[in-house]
Image 1: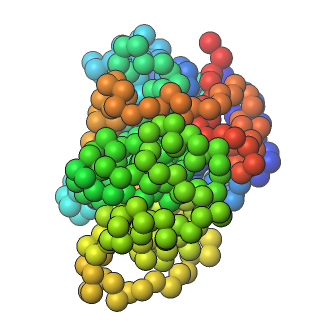
Image 2: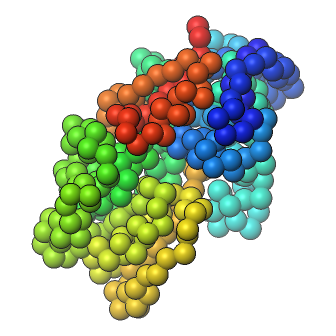
Length: 344
Ligand SMILES: [Zn+2]
Ligand SMILES: [Zn+2]
């Protein structure tokens, strides 16, 4: 079979790789669509992984073969899945911190979503895999995993009806989070970004306010919109650590910042630490998703609770992953979500 294999920056080869073999509890999937995630782009461009490796984890695929112990799925089923499975019994899992489980990151799909076929190990089959509802396209189904990740973060932000939410960064994660916050009852959802294209798209998706900090004073606009109170929740969905002190400054008393971004460059920042005691603010970190968010994300897609279709701006064939990454990472391009399509 063929896969788009990452070797190093600017070197992704579309080449022949071994077809994975399955065991009793596994299933073999024929990939149909795989979303290009910000973390795939980040890994490829900042070389945070060592090649050769097949990236991709926003999987929508068809079951082609099942192990003899698999009863939940059969060939022909259309499914979505995610990549990491916790153990459900360690110190972290017992406390609900599934993404921090020691087993989480070492569990993986084989070889990765940017391939013609993938093996889903037994644990993935058991805990993370769900049928795609009828009528949902492959491209749209590939958005289930990122929706799950956003739900994971927003749950901790406690979005209550009528609250105000600012999302800094209007990429896929930002615009999904903004729409999900509105779905959860936030009545004032604001996004910020430097890209006029993304801000326009945000307004088309029904977001209440879209602010470009390069031409407007973000703090002043937030103060205006919230009548001087500050926002209840800020979600940081852009990889710039300097956004953290700014986010804290725009919070209302008792407000919460959710950080959903790796911040692995220049990550030291100075914040007004007095606000924790004085104003009871919180800063919450979030990463990935747990298996519990997957069925919720499937249901959101099935019932069209948010507009995902208009977020998918480009599709690329699997063989052009390198081009897709280059295109998606250039801030001058009018692009939001890129989905890799496997040839029929
Ligand atoms: Zn992702
Ligand atoms: Zn665990």
